[in-house]
Image (cartoon, rainbow, N blue to C red; front, top):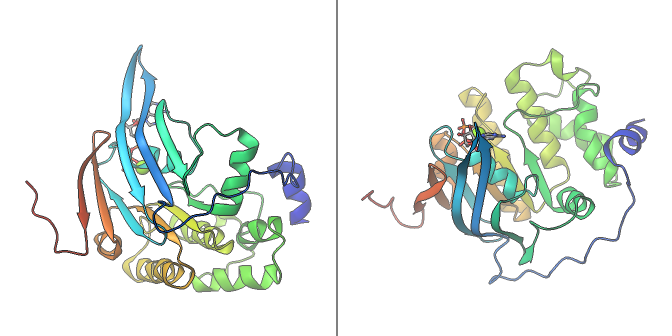
Length: 261
Ligand SMILES: Nc1ncnc2c1ncn2[C@@H]1O[C@H](COP(=O)(O)OP(=O)(O)OP(=O)(O)O)[C@@H](O)[C@H]1O
Ligand SMILES: [Mg+2]
C-alpha cells in the first residue's frame, strides 16, 4: 500500500535509474563543499543577501555543527547543501561533483540515495502513520525486512508504541523523532538535520544524540547539524558560526576552543 502511495504521489518516475555514476570519493575530496555560495532573495522591492560567499569543505565522516543567531542563514545553507534549493551564485559539490545545476530528476535521485534530511518543521506525510512515514524510504529503496527495521527505528527513538498514530496525534517532539527515524532509515551517507534536538527534553535529546553519534561511528555518516544545543555542538568535530549570512568563525574541537577575537 505504501509503495503504491509512493508511486502515485511521491515519485513521478520511480524507477529512473539513469543517474550519472557517483564520482569516487577519497580522503582528499570533501564529501560536501561550497564555493562562493551566495543566496539572494527579493524582499519588499529590493534584494536581500541571505548567504554571502560561503566557503566550506566537509570531509567524509565529519560531524559539523552550524550555529548562529535566528535569521543568520542556517536553514538556507542546509537546504542548499541538500540540493533542495538553488544558489544565486556559487557552487555546491557532493563528492567533488557539482550539484547546484543538476536537473530536478537527477537531484531527487541523488537525495534519495545519498542525503537524509530532517527539516526544522519535520514535514511528515500527514496521511501516513508514524510507522508508514519511517517505512516509506525503506520501501522506495527496496530494502529487506523494511517493516521490522522501521519498527526498530521507532523504538530506538522511544516511540515503539506510537507507530499507528498519525502526525496530528503526536506532539512536536514526537513528530521530530519520527522525522529523525525516517531520515536514519535509509542509512544515508550524508545526514543533514535542522535543530534535531530543538523540541526535545534533555533525556530524549540525549538519546537522539546517541543515535546520531552511532550513525557516524558505525556507518561513517557525514553529519551536518544546525543547532542551538550545546550538547550537539560539543559532539561536533567543527563548529561553524554564521552571522548575517557569513561565516563568522570556525571552531575545531581538535584543539581547545579558539578564543574569539
Ligand atoms: N523565502 C524567503 N523569502 C524572503 N526571506 C527569506 C526567505 N527564506 C528565508 N528568508 C530570510 O533569510 C534569512 C535567513 O533565514 P534562515 O531560515 O536560513 O535562518 P536561520 O538561521 O535558519 O534562523 P532560525 O534559527 O530562526 O531557524 C532570514 O532573515 C529570513 O527571513
Ligand atoms: Mg532555521
